[in-house]
Image (cartoon, rainbow, N blue to C red; front, side, top):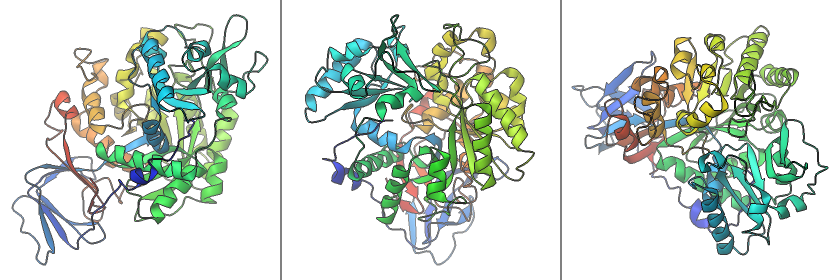
Length: 550
Protein backbone atom coordinates (compact mmCIF):
# COMPACT_ATOMS: atom_id res chain seq x y z
CA UNK A 1 0.00 0.00 0.00
CA UNK A 2 1.28 3.48 -0.82
CA UNK A 3 1.74 5.21 2.51
CA UNK A 4 1.69 8.85 3.58
CA UNK A 5 0.43 10.30 6.82
CA UNK A 6 0.72 13.25 9.12
CA UNK A 7 1.73 12.45 12.66
CA UNK A 8 -0.60 14.75 14.60
CA UNK A 9 -1.86 11.81 16.61
CA UNK A 10 1.45 9.94 16.70
CA UNK A 11 2.17 10.38 20.40
CA UNK A 12 -1.26 9.19 21.50
CA UNK A 13 -1.21 6.20 19.17
CA UNK A 14 2.27 5.07 20.16
CA UNK A 15 1.36 5.29 23.84
CA UNK A 16 -1.68 3.04 23.37
CA UNK A 17 0.34 -0.18 23.46
CA UNK A 18 0.54 -0.77 27.20
CA UNK A 19 1.71 -3.89 29.00
CA UNK A 20 1.62 -4.83 32.66
CA UNK A 21 4.71 -6.26 34.36
CA UNK A 22 4.98 -10.02 34.57
CA UNK A 23 5.13 -11.56 38.01
CA UNK A 24 7.34 -14.45 39.05
CA UNK A 25 5.64 -17.85 39.12
CA UNK A 26 2.10 -16.80 38.35
CA UNK A 27 -0.82 -19.21 38.41
CA UNK A 28 -3.88 -18.58 36.25
CA UNK A 29 -6.61 -20.92 37.50
CA UNK A 30 -10.34 -21.54 37.20
CA UNK A 31 -10.22 -21.55 33.40
CA UNK A 32 -11.58 -23.84 30.72
CA UNK A 33 -8.24 -24.21 28.96
CA UNK A 34 -7.88 -25.43 25.38
CA UNK A 35 -4.75 -25.98 23.30
CA UNK A 36 -3.55 -28.10 20.40
CA UNK A 37 -1.18 -30.90 21.40
CA UNK A 38 1.89 -32.05 19.50
CA UNK A 39 -0.17 -34.74 17.77
CA UNK A 40 -2.79 -32.21 16.67
CA UNK A 41 -5.35 -33.40 19.20
CA UNK A 42 -7.10 -30.99 21.52
CA UNK A 43 -5.91 -30.93 25.12
CA UNK A 44 -7.96 -29.40 27.93
CA UNK A 45 -6.77 -28.09 31.29
CA UNK A 46 -7.90 -26.03 34.27
CA UNK A 47 -4.85 -23.89 35.11
CA UNK A 48 -1.35 -22.98 34.02
CA UNK A 49 1.74 -21.51 35.63
CA UNK A 50 4.26 -19.21 33.98
CA UNK A 51 7.54 -17.81 35.25
CA UNK A 52 8.95 -14.30 35.31
CA UNK A 53 10.26 -14.73 31.76
CA UNK A 54 6.74 -15.34 30.52
CA UNK A 55 7.27 -19.04 29.79
CA UNK A 56 4.80 -21.70 30.80
CA UNK A 57 6.22 -24.05 33.43
CA UNK A 58 3.16 -26.20 34.22
CA UNK A 59 -0.26 -26.99 32.81
CA UNK A 60 -2.67 -28.43 35.35
CA UNK A 61 -5.59 -30.68 34.62
CA UNK A 62 -8.66 -30.92 36.79
CA UNK A 63 -7.88 -32.41 40.21
CA UNK A 64 -4.15 -31.75 40.10
CA UNK A 65 -2.66 -29.98 43.11
CA UNK A 66 -1.37 -26.46 42.77
CA UNK A 67 2.40 -26.15 43.01
CA UNK A 68 3.93 -24.63 46.13
CA UNK A 69 5.79 -21.34 46.27
CA UNK A 70 3.59 -19.35 43.89
CA UNK A 71 3.99 -15.60 43.97
CA UNK A 72 0.67 -14.68 42.39
CA UNK A 73 -2.62 -16.34 41.52
CA UNK A 74 -5.14 -14.99 39.02
CA UNK A 75 -8.72 -16.24 38.98
CA UNK A 76 -9.86 -16.80 35.40
CA UNK A 77 -13.49 -16.77 36.59
CA UNK A 78 -14.43 -19.75 34.49
CA UNK A 79 -13.55 -18.12 31.18
CA UNK A 80 -12.24 -20.08 28.23
CA UNK A 81 -8.47 -19.86 27.82
CA UNK A 82 -7.17 -20.21 24.27
CA UNK A 83 -3.70 -19.82 22.80
CA UNK A 84 -3.11 -16.37 21.39
CA UNK A 85 -4.28 -16.33 17.79
CA UNK A 86 -1.61 -16.27 15.08
CA UNK A 87 -2.42 -14.65 11.74
CA UNK A 88 -0.27 -16.39 9.14
CA UNK A 89 -0.56 -13.65 6.51
CA UNK A 90 -0.91 -9.92 7.14
CA UNK A 91 0.60 -6.65 5.99
CA UNK A 92 1.32 -5.06 9.35
CA UNK A 93 2.13 -1.51 8.33
CA UNK A 94 -0.73 -1.44 5.85
CA UNK A 95 -3.13 -2.26 8.70
CA UNK A 96 -1.97 0.85 10.53
CA UNK A 97 -1.86 3.13 7.51
CA UNK A 98 -5.29 1.93 6.40
CA UNK A 99 -6.71 2.82 9.81
CA UNK A 100 -5.30 6.35 9.55
CA UNK A 101 -6.21 7.17 5.94
CA UNK A 102 -9.34 6.97 3.79
CA UNK A 103 -11.15 3.64 4.14
CA UNK A 104 -13.49 2.61 1.30
CA UNK A 105 -13.76 -1.06 2.26
CA UNK A 106 -17.42 -0.89 3.30
CA UNK A 107 -18.69 1.23 0.40
CA UNK A 108 -21.44 -0.43 -1.59
CA UNK A 109 -21.48 1.73 -4.71
CA UNK A 110 -19.30 4.07 -6.73
CA UNK A 111 -21.51 6.96 -5.69
CA UNK A 112 -21.04 6.20 -2.00
CA UNK A 113 -17.29 5.93 -2.49
CA UNK A 114 -17.11 9.27 -4.31
CA UNK A 115 -19.11 10.96 -1.54
CA UNK A 116 -16.72 9.60 1.07
CA UNK A 117 -13.67 10.67 -0.95
CA UNK A 118 -15.05 14.18 -1.33
CA UNK A 119 -15.79 14.41 2.40
CA UNK A 120 -12.34 13.12 3.34
CA UNK A 121 -10.68 15.70 1.08
CA UNK A 122 -12.82 18.45 2.61
CA UNK A 123 -11.96 17.30 6.14
CA UNK A 124 -8.22 17.14 5.38
CA UNK A 125 -7.39 20.33 3.45
CA UNK A 126 -3.69 20.18 4.40
CA UNK A 127 -2.92 16.81 2.88
CA UNK A 128 -1.04 17.23 -0.42
CA UNK A 129 -2.24 13.81 -1.63
CA UNK A 130 -5.53 12.08 -0.82
CA UNK A 131 -4.62 8.48 -0.08
CA UNK A 132 -6.69 5.47 0.90
CA UNK A 133 -7.66 1.93 0.10
CA UNK A 134 -10.42 -0.65 0.02
CA UNK A 135 -12.41 0.06 -3.15
CA UNK A 136 -13.86 -2.88 -5.04
CA UNK A 137 -15.74 -2.47 -8.29
CA UNK A 138 -17.18 -5.97 -7.89
CA UNK A 139 -18.85 -5.05 -4.61
CA UNK A 140 -20.20 -1.92 -6.28
CA UNK A 141 -21.73 -3.96 -9.11
CA UNK A 142 -20.05 -1.56 -11.50
CA UNK A 143 -19.09 -4.05 -14.19
CA UNK A 144 -15.95 -2.03 -15.00
CA UNK A 145 -13.08 -0.25 -13.32
CA UNK A 146 -13.67 3.30 -12.01
CA UNK A 147 -12.02 6.20 -13.82
CA UNK A 148 -9.82 9.21 -13.19
CA UNK A 149 -12.57 11.46 -14.51
CA UNK A 150 -14.90 10.27 -11.76
CA UNK A 151 -12.30 11.19 -9.15
CA UNK A 152 -11.66 14.54 -10.83
CA UNK A 153 -15.30 15.44 -10.31
CA UNK A 154 -14.94 15.28 -6.51
CA UNK A 155 -11.25 16.15 -5.95
CA UNK A 156 -9.95 18.37 -8.75
CA UNK A 157 -7.30 20.24 -6.73
CA UNK A 158 -4.96 17.49 -5.42
CA UNK A 159 -3.65 14.12 -6.54
CA UNK A 160 -5.74 11.14 -5.40
CA UNK A 161 -4.29 7.63 -5.16
CA UNK A 162 -6.43 4.78 -3.86
CA UNK A 163 -5.52 1.13 -3.49
CA UNK A 164 -7.98 -1.60 -4.44
CA UNK A 165 -9.22 -3.95 -1.70
CA UNK A 166 -6.91 -6.78 -2.82
CA UNK A 167 -3.73 -4.63 -2.92
CA UNK A 168 -3.29 -5.47 -6.63
CA UNK A 169 -4.56 -2.32 -8.35
CA UNK A 170 -4.67 1.44 -7.75
CA UNK A 171 -7.04 4.16 -8.90
CA UNK A 172 -5.83 7.72 -9.45
CA UNK A 173 -7.20 11.03 -10.62
CA UNK A 174 -5.83 13.12 -13.46
CA UNK A 175 -3.50 15.15 -11.23
CA UNK A 176 -1.90 11.96 -9.93
CA UNK A 177 -1.34 10.71 -13.46
CA UNK A 178 -0.05 14.12 -14.52
CA UNK A 179 2.51 14.27 -11.70
CA UNK A 180 3.77 10.83 -12.72
CA UNK A 181 3.96 11.81 -16.39
CA UNK A 182 1.50 9.14 -17.50
CA UNK A 183 0.29 9.50 -21.09
CA UNK A 184 -1.07 7.30 -23.83
CA UNK A 185 2.54 6.61 -24.82
CA UNK A 186 3.42 5.14 -21.41
CA UNK A 187 3.96 1.42 -21.98
CA UNK A 188 2.67 -1.32 -19.73
CA UNK A 189 5.53 -2.53 -17.53
CA UNK A 190 6.41 -6.19 -17.29
CA UNK A 191 3.94 -7.83 -14.92
CA UNK A 192 1.59 -4.85 -14.97
CA UNK A 193 -1.26 -3.35 -16.95
CA UNK A 194 -2.55 0.19 -17.44
CA UNK A 195 -6.30 0.17 -17.98
CA UNK A 196 -7.01 2.14 -21.14
CA UNK A 197 -10.00 3.34 -23.17
CA UNK A 198 -10.70 2.49 -26.81
CA UNK A 199 -8.26 5.19 -27.90
CA UNK A 200 -5.44 3.83 -25.79
CA UNK A 201 -5.58 6.61 -23.19
CA UNK A 202 -5.07 5.62 -19.52
CA UNK A 203 -8.39 5.72 -17.67
CA UNK A 204 -7.00 5.90 -14.12
CA UNK A 205 -6.52 2.30 -12.91
CA UNK A 206 -3.14 0.58 -12.74
CA UNK A 207 -2.87 -3.17 -12.12
CA UNK A 208 -0.05 -4.97 -10.27
CA UNK A 209 3.41 -3.74 -11.34
CA UNK A 210 1.91 -0.79 -13.21
CA UNK A 211 0.89 0.77 -9.88
CA UNK A 212 4.49 1.80 -9.23
CA UNK A 213 4.37 4.13 -12.24
CA UNK A 214 2.33 6.53 -10.10
CA UNK A 215 2.95 5.16 -6.61
CA UNK A 216 6.65 6.00 -6.80
CA UNK A 217 5.69 9.70 -6.90
CA UNK A 218 3.72 9.62 -3.65
CA UNK A 219 5.72 11.25 -0.82
CA UNK A 220 7.16 8.74 1.62
CA UNK A 221 5.92 8.80 5.23
CA UNK A 222 8.24 10.06 7.93
CA UNK A 223 9.56 7.78 10.69
CA UNK A 224 7.09 9.29 13.17
CA UNK A 225 4.26 8.56 10.72
CA UNK A 226 5.40 4.95 10.54
CA UNK A 227 5.63 4.68 14.30
CA UNK A 228 2.08 5.98 14.66
CA UNK A 229 0.80 3.55 12.03
CA UNK A 230 2.58 0.62 13.68
CA UNK A 231 1.10 1.49 17.07
CA UNK A 232 -2.35 1.55 15.47
CA UNK A 233 -1.73 -1.79 13.74
CA UNK A 234 -0.77 -3.44 17.02
CA UNK A 235 -3.86 -1.99 18.68
CA UNK A 236 -6.10 -3.42 15.94
CA UNK A 237 -4.47 -6.85 16.08
CA UNK A 238 -4.75 -7.10 19.86
CA UNK A 239 -8.42 -6.12 19.68
CA UNK A 240 -8.96 -9.22 17.53
CA UNK A 241 -6.96 -11.45 19.90
CA UNK A 242 -4.03 -11.75 17.50
CA UNK A 243 -0.76 -12.11 19.39
CA UNK A 244 1.57 -13.06 16.51
CA UNK A 245 1.63 -12.51 12.77
CA UNK A 246 3.56 -13.34 9.62
CA UNK A 247 4.25 -9.99 7.94
CA UNK A 248 4.28 -10.47 4.21
CA UNK A 249 6.36 -8.00 2.20
CA UNK A 250 8.42 -6.38 4.96
CA UNK A 251 10.41 -3.41 3.63
CA UNK A 252 13.59 -1.96 5.06
CA UNK A 253 11.57 0.95 6.47
CA UNK A 254 9.08 -1.50 8.02
CA UNK A 255 11.90 -3.45 9.70
CA UNK A 256 13.38 -0.27 11.15
CA UNK A 257 9.93 0.62 12.49
CA UNK A 258 9.64 -2.74 14.23
CA UNK A 259 13.17 -2.39 15.63
CA UNK A 260 12.47 1.11 16.97
CA UNK A 261 9.42 -0.25 18.75
CA UNK A 262 11.44 -3.15 20.13
CA UNK A 263 14.23 -0.90 21.34
CA UNK A 264 11.72 1.32 23.17
CA UNK A 265 9.74 -1.56 24.69
CA UNK A 266 6.72 -0.93 22.46
CA UNK A 267 6.89 -4.10 20.36
CA UNK A 268 4.00 -6.18 21.70
CA UNK A 269 2.74 -8.43 18.88
CA UNK A 270 5.18 -11.11 17.69
CA UNK A 271 6.25 -10.68 14.06
CA UNK A 272 7.67 -13.26 11.67
CA UNK A 273 8.92 -11.11 8.80
CA UNK A 274 9.15 -11.99 5.10
CA UNK A 275 11.00 -9.48 2.93
CA UNK A 276 9.46 -7.73 -0.05
CA UNK A 277 12.46 -8.71 -2.20
CA UNK A 278 15.67 -10.75 -2.12
CA UNK A 279 17.61 -7.49 -1.99
CA UNK A 280 15.78 -6.36 1.15
CA UNK A 281 16.34 -9.77 2.68
CA UNK A 282 20.08 -9.65 2.10
CA UNK A 283 20.37 -6.03 3.27
CA UNK A 284 18.64 -6.69 6.59
CA UNK A 285 19.38 -10.30 7.47
CA UNK A 286 22.65 -10.85 5.64
CA UNK A 287 23.74 -14.45 5.05
CA UNK A 288 21.07 -16.20 7.18
CA UNK A 289 17.81 -15.66 9.06
CA UNK A 290 18.14 -13.31 12.01
CA UNK A 291 17.98 -14.64 15.55
CA UNK A 292 14.76 -14.17 17.49
CA UNK A 293 14.84 -10.70 19.02
CA UNK A 294 13.06 -9.01 21.91
CA UNK A 295 12.05 -12.17 23.76
CA UNK A 296 10.82 -14.00 20.64
CA UNK A 297 8.94 -10.98 19.30
CA UNK A 298 10.75 -10.44 16.00
CA UNK A 299 12.62 -12.50 13.44
CA UNK A 300 13.40 -12.18 9.74
CA UNK A 301 12.39 -15.58 8.37
CA UNK A 302 12.57 -15.27 4.62
CA UNK A 303 11.20 -13.63 1.50
CA UNK A 304 7.76 -13.09 -0.04
CA UNK A 305 7.63 -13.60 -3.82
CA UNK A 306 4.72 -12.59 -6.06
CA UNK A 307 4.05 -15.01 -8.90
CA UNK A 308 0.72 -13.59 -10.07
CA UNK A 309 -1.93 -11.01 -9.21
CA UNK A 310 -5.47 -11.29 -7.88
CA UNK A 311 -8.78 -12.55 -9.25
CA UNK A 312 -10.55 -9.22 -8.74
CA UNK A 313 -8.24 -7.36 -11.12
CA UNK A 314 -7.88 -10.45 -13.36
CA UNK A 315 -4.20 -10.64 -12.57
CA UNK A 316 -4.24 -14.18 -11.16
CA UNK A 317 -2.75 -16.47 -13.80
CA UNK A 318 -5.02 -19.23 -15.06
CA UNK A 319 -4.44 -22.29 -17.22
CA UNK A 320 -7.36 -21.25 -19.41
CA UNK A 321 -8.73 -17.75 -20.17
CA UNK A 322 -11.05 -15.97 -17.77
CA UNK A 323 -14.69 -16.85 -18.36
CA UNK A 324 -15.66 -13.16 -18.22
CA UNK A 325 -12.57 -11.92 -20.12
CA UNK A 326 -11.61 -14.54 -22.69
CA UNK A 327 -8.76 -12.41 -24.04
CA UNK A 328 -6.61 -12.84 -20.93
CA UNK A 329 -5.23 -15.54 -18.65
CA UNK A 330 -3.85 -13.06 -16.09
CA UNK A 331 -0.52 -11.40 -15.39
CA UNK A 332 2.59 -13.43 -14.60
CA UNK A 333 4.80 -11.35 -12.32
CA UNK A 334 7.80 -13.70 -12.55
CA UNK A 335 8.99 -16.01 -15.27
CA UNK A 336 9.58 -19.67 -14.33
CA UNK A 337 13.32 -19.01 -14.42
CA UNK A 338 13.05 -15.94 -12.21
CA UNK A 339 10.93 -17.83 -9.70
CA UNK A 340 13.43 -20.67 -9.41
CA UNK A 341 16.37 -18.29 -9.24
CA UNK A 342 14.87 -16.32 -6.34
CA UNK A 343 13.74 -19.43 -4.49
CA UNK A 344 17.22 -20.90 -4.92
CA UNK A 345 18.94 -17.71 -3.69
CA UNK A 346 16.85 -17.86 -0.52
CA UNK A 347 17.24 -21.59 0.02
CA UNK A 348 21.02 -21.48 -0.32
CA UNK A 349 21.17 -19.23 2.74
CA UNK A 350 18.57 -21.10 4.75
CA UNK A 351 15.79 -18.58 4.22
CA UNK A 352 12.16 -19.62 3.86
CA UNK A 353 10.20 -18.65 0.75
CA UNK A 354 6.55 -17.62 0.81
CA UNK A 355 5.15 -17.47 -2.71
CA UNK A 356 1.97 -15.63 -3.63
CA UNK A 357 -0.02 -17.83 -6.01
CA UNK A 358 -3.75 -17.36 -6.58
CA UNK A 359 -4.59 -18.76 -10.02
CA UNK A 360 -4.37 -22.42 -10.99
CA UNK A 361 -1.48 -21.77 -13.39
CA UNK A 362 0.50 -19.95 -10.70
CA UNK A 363 -0.12 -22.70 -8.16
CA UNK A 364 0.97 -25.36 -10.63
CA UNK A 365 4.16 -23.40 -11.32
CA UNK A 366 4.98 -23.12 -7.60
CA UNK A 367 4.41 -26.85 -7.13
CA UNK A 368 6.66 -27.58 -10.12
CA UNK A 369 9.39 -25.33 -8.73
CA UNK A 370 9.24 -26.88 -5.25
CA UNK A 371 9.44 -30.35 -6.75
CA UNK A 372 12.52 -29.43 -8.78
CA UNK A 373 14.32 -27.47 -6.05
CA UNK A 374 13.68 -30.10 -3.38
CA UNK A 375 16.17 -32.30 -5.17
CA UNK A 376 18.92 -29.73 -4.44
CA UNK A 377 17.71 -28.28 -1.15
CA UNK A 378 16.81 -30.97 1.33
CA UNK A 379 16.01 -30.60 5.00
CA UNK A 380 13.23 -28.71 6.73
CA UNK A 381 12.36 -26.04 4.16
CA UNK A 382 8.66 -25.46 4.91
CA UNK A 383 7.92 -24.09 1.44
CA UNK A 384 4.92 -21.75 1.74
CA UNK A 385 2.26 -21.11 -0.89
CA UNK A 386 0.40 -17.93 0.00
CA UNK A 387 -3.33 -17.94 -0.84
CA UNK A 388 -3.54 -21.08 -3.03
CA UNK A 389 -7.05 -19.94 -3.91
CA UNK A 390 -7.66 -21.61 -7.26
CA UNK A 391 -5.91 -24.95 -7.77
CA UNK A 392 -6.42 -27.46 -10.56
CA UNK A 393 -7.98 -30.56 -8.96
CA UNK A 394 -5.23 -32.61 -10.56
CA UNK A 395 -2.63 -30.57 -8.65
CA UNK A 396 -4.21 -30.82 -5.18
CA UNK A 397 -2.45 -34.09 -4.22
CA UNK A 398 0.91 -32.40 -4.81
CA UNK A 399 0.40 -30.24 -1.72
CA UNK A 400 1.18 -33.38 0.25
CA UNK A 401 4.73 -33.52 -1.11
CA UNK A 402 7.91 -31.87 0.19
CA UNK A 403 6.36 -30.43 3.36
CA UNK A 404 4.45 -27.69 1.53
CA UNK A 405 2.39 -25.31 3.66
CA UNK A 406 -0.74 -23.77 2.18
CA UNK A 407 -1.11 -20.38 3.87
CA UNK A 408 -4.76 -19.55 3.23
CA UNK A 409 -7.31 -16.97 4.32
CA UNK A 410 -10.82 -18.28 5.03
CA UNK A 411 -12.49 -14.87 4.74
CA UNK A 412 -11.35 -14.62 1.12
CA UNK A 413 -13.71 -17.48 0.31
CA UNK A 414 -16.80 -15.60 1.45
CA UNK A 415 -15.67 -12.28 -0.04
CA UNK A 416 -14.66 -13.77 -3.38
CA UNK A 417 -17.12 -16.58 -4.07
CA UNK A 418 -19.43 -14.62 -6.40
CA UNK A 419 -16.46 -13.15 -8.21
CA UNK A 420 -14.81 -16.56 -8.49
CA UNK A 421 -17.98 -17.93 -10.07
CA UNK A 422 -17.93 -15.08 -12.59
CA UNK A 423 -14.23 -15.45 -13.39
CA UNK A 424 -14.32 -19.24 -13.79
CA UNK A 425 -16.68 -21.87 -15.10
CA UNK A 426 -18.21 -24.32 -12.62
CA UNK A 427 -15.94 -27.16 -13.70
CA UNK A 428 -12.88 -25.06 -12.78
CA UNK A 429 -13.99 -24.42 -9.19
CA UNK A 430 -13.28 -27.92 -7.91
CA UNK A 431 -10.02 -26.76 -6.34
CA UNK A 432 -11.26 -23.37 -5.14
CA UNK A 433 -10.34 -22.59 -1.52
CA UNK A 434 -9.89 -26.34 -1.09
CA UNK A 435 -8.90 -26.51 2.57
CA UNK A 436 -10.06 -30.03 3.33
CA UNK A 437 -8.64 -31.46 0.11
CA UNK A 438 -5.21 -30.03 0.93
CA UNK A 439 -5.28 -31.55 4.41
CA UNK A 440 -6.46 -34.90 3.07
CA UNK A 441 -3.61 -34.83 0.54
CA UNK A 442 -1.16 -34.58 3.43
CA UNK A 443 -0.52 -30.86 3.09
CA UNK A 444 -0.40 -28.42 5.98
CA UNK A 445 -2.73 -25.47 6.49
CA UNK A 446 -1.89 -22.17 8.16
CA UNK A 447 -4.74 -19.67 8.34
CA UNK A 448 -4.61 -15.89 8.24
CA UNK A 449 -6.55 -12.87 7.01
CA UNK A 450 -4.42 -10.92 4.52
CA UNK A 451 -5.31 -7.85 6.60
CA UNK A 452 -6.06 -5.13 5.75
CA UNK A 453 -7.58 -6.84 2.69
CA UNK A 454 -9.87 -8.62 5.17
CA UNK A 455 -10.32 -7.86 8.88
CA UNK A 456 -7.68 -9.59 11.03
CA UNK A 457 -10.46 -11.46 12.84
CA UNK A 458 -9.49 -15.09 13.54
CA UNK A 459 -12.85 -15.94 15.06
CA UNK A 460 -14.64 -14.89 11.88
CA UNK A 461 -12.03 -16.96 10.03
CA UNK A 462 -12.76 -20.03 12.15
CA UNK A 463 -16.49 -19.56 11.57
CA UNK A 464 -15.98 -19.50 7.80
CA UNK A 465 -13.57 -22.43 7.84
CA UNK A 466 -16.11 -24.73 9.52
CA UNK A 467 -19.17 -23.55 7.57
CA UNK A 468 -18.23 -21.91 4.24
CA UNK A 469 -20.90 -19.29 5.03
CA UNK A 470 -20.64 -15.53 5.48
CA UNK A 471 -21.71 -13.31 8.38
CA UNK A 472 -25.34 -13.59 7.27
CA UNK A 473 -25.15 -17.38 7.10
CA UNK A 474 -25.18 -17.38 3.30
CA UNK A 475 -25.28 -19.43 1.24
CA UNK A 476 -27.46 -21.86 3.13
CA UNK A 477 -25.50 -25.04 3.77
CA UNK A 478 -22.23 -23.40 2.72
CA UNK A 479 -20.46 -22.76 -0.59
CA UNK A 480 -18.85 -26.00 -1.73
CA UNK A 481 -19.26 -27.35 1.83
CA UNK A 482 -17.19 -30.45 1.09
CA UNK A 483 -14.15 -28.22 1.71
CA UNK A 484 -14.99 -27.26 5.29
CA UNK A 485 -12.58 -28.27 8.04
CA UNK A 486 -13.32 -29.31 11.61
CA UNK A 487 -13.32 -26.87 14.52
CA UNK A 488 -10.17 -28.51 15.83
CA UNK A 489 -8.41 -28.16 12.47
CA UNK A 490 -9.44 -24.52 12.18
CA UNK A 491 -8.16 -23.71 15.68
CA UNK A 492 -4.91 -25.50 14.88
CA UNK A 493 -4.48 -23.51 11.66
CA UNK A 494 -4.81 -20.23 13.59
CA UNK A 495 -2.45 -21.29 16.41
CA UNK A 496 0.04 -24.17 16.42
CA UNK A 497 0.09 -24.70 12.65
CA UNK A 498 0.53 -20.99 11.99
CA UNK A 499 3.49 -20.98 14.39
CA UNK A 500 4.96 -24.01 12.61
CA UNK A 501 4.56 -22.23 9.28
CA UNK A 502 6.87 -19.48 10.58
CA UNK A 503 9.46 -21.71 12.28
CA UNK A 504 8.10 -20.58 15.66
CA UNK A 505 6.97 -24.00 16.88
CA UNK A 506 8.31 -24.66 20.36
CA UNK A 507 8.37 -20.93 21.09
CA UNK A 508 4.69 -19.96 20.95
CA UNK A 509 1.40 -21.16 19.50
CA UNK A 510 0.49 -23.80 22.08
CA UNK A 511 -0.18 -23.63 25.82
CA UNK A 512 2.36 -26.23 26.93
CA UNK A 513 5.42 -26.14 29.20
CA UNK A 514 8.38 -24.37 27.63
CA UNK A 515 6.39 -22.13 25.29
CA UNK A 516 5.54 -18.49 25.82
CA UNK A 517 2.44 -17.66 27.87
CA UNK A 518 0.50 -16.07 25.01
CA UNK A 519 -3.19 -16.60 25.70
CA UNK A 520 -6.69 -15.18 25.50
CA UNK A 521 -9.54 -15.30 27.99
CA UNK A 522 -12.81 -15.39 26.06
CA UNK A 523 -16.47 -15.94 26.84
CA UNK A 524 -17.16 -19.08 24.77
CA UNK A 525 -15.67 -22.33 23.54
CA UNK A 526 -15.12 -22.22 19.76
CA UNK A 527 -15.11 -26.01 19.66
CA UNK A 528 -18.72 -26.09 20.88
CA UNK A 529 -20.24 -22.87 19.52
CA UNK A 530 -22.10 -22.34 16.26
CA UNK A 531 -20.44 -20.34 13.48
CA UNK A 532 -22.54 -17.29 14.29
CA UNK A 533 -21.70 -17.56 17.99
CA UNK A 534 -17.99 -17.95 17.21
CA UNK A 535 -18.11 -14.68 15.27
CA UNK A 536 -19.58 -13.00 18.37
CA UNK A 537 -16.76 -14.14 20.67
CA UNK A 538 -15.97 -11.53 23.31
CA UNK A 539 -12.25 -11.27 24.06
CA UNK A 540 -11.92 -10.37 27.73
CA UNK A 541 -8.13 -10.38 28.12
CA UNK A 542 -5.04 -10.76 25.92
CA UNK A 543 -1.71 -11.88 27.39
CA UNK A 544 1.64 -12.07 25.60
CA UNK A 545 4.71 -13.52 27.29
CA UNK A 546 2.98 -13.54 30.66
CA UNK A 547 1.99 -9.89 30.44
CA UNK A 548 -1.52 -8.63 30.04
CA UNK A 549 -1.53 -6.34 27.00
CA UNK A 550 -5.26 -5.73 26.59
